[in-house]
Image (cartoon, rainbow, N blue to C red; front, side, top):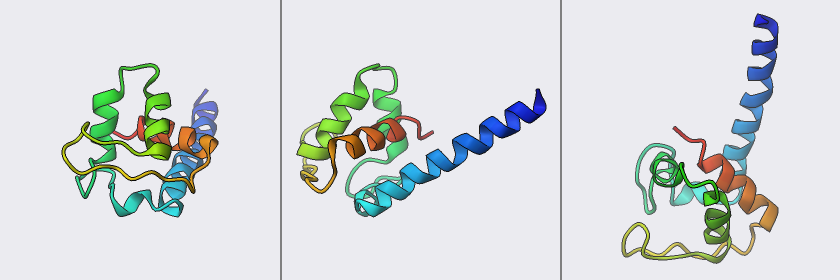
Length: 99
């Protein structure tokens, strides 16, 4: 049982890191950090706000691609056309896991 748990954690950890790596690659980390507000909210704040909404990843994925305003204050989030729909969904799901 212990070996299964270790193997499971080993498989999960790279996926979480890979999604943070994608956020860095797509320049998300220029405005967002894991645990503190930069230009935009911290990812852990986003996860706390939307974590109970089962469809939140869809809403966040759309905001990632199309941009948005008003949810976190007066500074708008610009559109990110360089992020594909699949990448936006991956990023949104990852953001919702940040604690």
